[in-house]
Length: 170
Image (cartoon, rainbow, N blue to C red):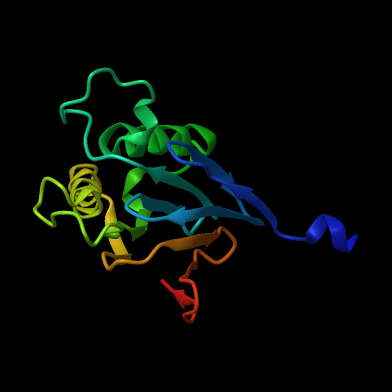
């Protein structure tokens, strides 16, 4: 086989976006601060999706929702629908999740629950996953540092890179 054809292809997922694909792809979110990366995976089909969630649920006071995908409740649901559509042989019972991000990036700001967007994002993501009966297998959330998240659809491994620290696997 041609080495170029067998190489793992990387798909970057920007803020307020998601991507759904299959092996041998890697889905990546770069620069997760208070944002949350949500990886959904079906280990049988090696299909998965990665969302880059920016804000808690869409019920928060927002003047207009310009991009529903940036909200935890709407973005995760849209990604799940796309995942189920792309591989109609899977159902939600076989899908699991891993999440990363949700940092408190501005330590000088008030850390009250209303100002800690990272914590609120993490809480809303977990609440949405639970409402969809998707099991959360692992997470790396909180803290005060940004992360890069890489999701290998061949293995289901999520690698988290934190600047000047060891890469961890979820």
